[in-house]
Every structure is written in structure tokens, then in C-alpha cells.
Image (tube, rainbow, N blue to C red; front, side, top):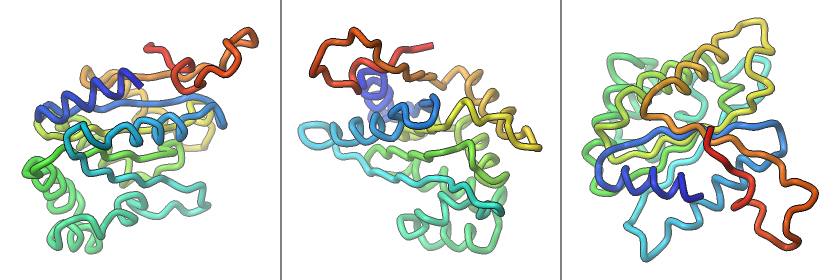
Length: 193
């Protein structure tokens, strides 16, 4: 939580960050994200929270997480999304919208291991430019499912994001059997790679 909080502090100061949370299924990636989002209430500065996820569909929805969030975008950005104008409309429009925002934004995309190519393109575009916006981009994925599909683009994109100097990789670990009884798991299961 401390690392997410620090990344959020940077975003509030208009120096965006990208944080990757990964681990096996059921380890608590979503729980960690939710616990972090719960900390963003007062007295912290106001933050817009945009959270969506990819789905394990046989035919993944193009830009599925962004489609789910379209109601939160200005009409021009939503129109570019629905018209399929990604690189010359949606991506730069979304970046401009978030750069101009009066408050920080947490944009979380969960289950990136199930992402379609368009979503991966967005992640690559946005993660490389997030430092110029008051945005914390949080990506969760199962590292044990990366590279298990016939097409290994997911593996390449996630590895690319991990190498990005702005990204902080958080790797969750299961509690050891001798963990302190009653301790809050979310605070004990994260370490920085």
C-alpha cells in the first residue's frame, strides 16, 4: 500500500506513474487495489477513480476496459472510442483529457493477461506518456498466465511495461505459515521487485 500511496502522491503533483501488480490467481491483486482505493478518501486530495477489467472471452472485446469506462470520458473521446479511431483520436484524446483534469486520476485496468490487442496498444501508448499527466495507471495481471496463449504479445507488452523506468512492479507473495495471527494480509503480502 505504501508504494501505491507514493505513486499516487506523484500523480497528485502531475507526475504520473504506472504500477504493475502481478501474481498468481487468488493471491489478492484485486483486494490490494481495492484497499488502496479505499484509502483515497478525505483527507487526501480528491481523486477520480476509473476501474475496469479485461475478460476471459473467446473473442476479447476490442478496448473492452475503455468501452466500460466510456461514460466517464468527454463526448469527443467516447466518439473516437466507438468509431475505432484509436491512434488518431482515442489515445491522444484520452491523454489530453486526463492531462487537463483538475484532480488526479487512478486508472486501473485489471486482468491484463486477458487483454485484446487494442487494450495492449493503449497501455503501451499511455504508460510511455503517463509521466506528463496527473494519473496513476495501475495494471493487474496473472504472471503465470502470460505467454500461455498461442500469441505471446501479452508477454511482450507486460515485459515491456516492466522495463519502463516509470513503472514500479509490485509482486504479491502469499503469507508464510508463521505470519502473525490476525495481521492484515494486504500489508504483508507485497514487496518491490
